[in-house]
Image (cartoon, rainbow over all chains, first blue to last red; front, side, top):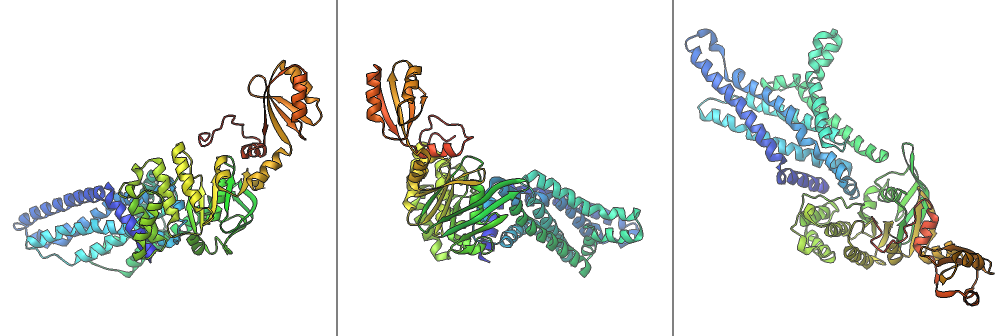
Length: 255
Length: 318
């Protein structure tokens, strides 16, 4: 536990004493702000029109702003979280600190979890800052639906899965660029694999759809917390954290 | 304290270390000597448990380094080659981090770090970023992190590589300060360092232990007989041919300078040789007995290494 905390604090401090965290959070907020702004202006425009056109009266805040915002954010995360995880092991392997770190009395799992939760903390800060938009909506006198909470839970789980995969790939290479590009590629593949469902038989189709990362976020953004989706993200995360532990071990056998 | 029994390590098809065995007693300083690529670093990594051996066993204080990794790591302070440190931390932050991870209690941590910074004379650098430090200071921070937690064993992999002569001396004095108090394993290819600090030497080449013993014993083993260095004025070829025929002389070869010769002898021949040279009418300028240095031992054992004729202490290292 002590070792976990030592690693966690070191990694977290490193994110915030270097520009990494600031740049990522800044860019993320600019993009998220733009999505929110354009959703909101579009919504206000449509609401004006709907006063004259009764057919559009069914529009609501969730469908028009919240759900699109969360799915847009998930795409931004797909692009940005690999940048957060790329250095975690690759940098240590390149600079040789990896060897020194494992000459201290630490267990692999303590190092892994310290790094994982440091990245998760930066990611959580990033997400939490977008909460401002919902405060803004509340300030405008709109009632913020509780869908927001399940949406954030969904994004947190999705991001946790991205980070687990990113860490795993970072443990395979000593090159940070390779780690980032490979993580992005694999994540994108998991993202779009559901598309091929249309072209394969009914059996594989269900499988492809199930392993697709994006499909499981849908229900969260609509306010539905399904245990199947919850289980999917947690399993995905545990699976890749487990693979990372194996990879740390095999690094030593292979030299 | 440390027992290495028939250890070998293979990476794919490359056999980095083959059947290496040696022991280190508590408080002993062992020099681990070999040319670049001989398997020194691999052996150090086997000792710290970073690499599991392909065959054989490494025990530290009776514990297998791989099975009891945590206990063993607590007993070892390790300074890897090239001193990999976290450059983006300050010296103080880094040493605090190491103290925490080595399990020092919060209350003891700050005092321990202060004391070790004092020992290594880096107190003035406490607030500097490690990446901005000079090589000499980095090396000291590297030593400091190894010393945190007061380990019984220090394993230092090429601790003076790339330093200037003054820094080399400082680091060496620092290391010498621990000799006797801690069990020390020093891997290096700088020979005077070993004869200065270590009581025992293991020489490794191409993954094999080629010699083991005290520096003096190893020197004696290589020469077997004495060597004389002569400077004589006269016809070189004739001198060489006639000296070689003296009884007790094994061989005569030309030295580096004109008129100099290296004579290998199997008994004391100096008086007769001096007499002989004078009688022959040549001029005897100099006659110096040369016992083999550790360097000679090394070159003798590690044949493919080209002799570096003017390797001076500390500077002979690229």
